[in-house]
Length: 283
Image 1 (cartoon, rainbow, N blue to C red):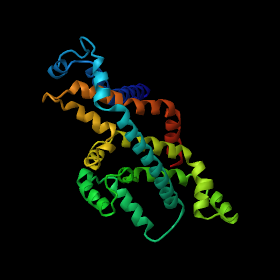
Image 2: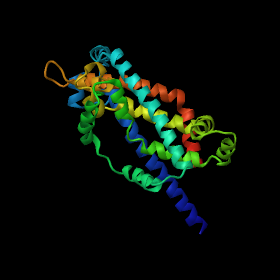
Image 3: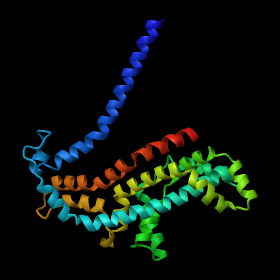
Image 4: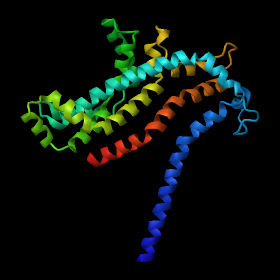
């Protein structure tokens, strides 16, 4: 029996590591492909062949930096990502707090609808009606409109905060009420400082998703090129004036575009992991 148990233990350990290895491979391979492809000529890249470039073309990065107007569009992406992150952190943390702590008519129905919407994705189909809706209020073609649109779909973030708040003793709220605090005072003075780890996770997820968004920002900035984001500008690099898709330049631009997100993760990875771990324990 012991040998049989030992065999199954080893088998499942090996199987687990194989699955992890495959997942890592599928995650890392596109990044490696983009980095190596950005150093090739367009012909070398499109014809395939060797994985590594024969003669690294560092000038691809110079061309991508200039053609994509990197500085200007990076500023747009940074402003939009930061704005969306701030609004998302506020709305998701406040909503998660209300769901976790307070009872009101229709709460269970609303939570059920929130949960159901996690499995329904309308996608780009809803962007045109949203744009028409914003036009009614003269908000289209503005930075605020883009931030509000990208702030939507905070369902996952709300549930993350909700699970975290449930792990905080309710006695803190009751003591605050006795001291004369209202709902918003409790949220701002007590709950918000205690849920900073999970709010940090929400902030990182939102910043990353907004920075990498393409379809929404493309549609919402079509009539106002001054709001074009870096991701949209990078994709447009493949359209050459010579009618040939310059994939090598686009990959160079994509490699430049992921640098800010990677730097953000490098400096905040400890907080990110601790926030997810704490949230899992509390949830």
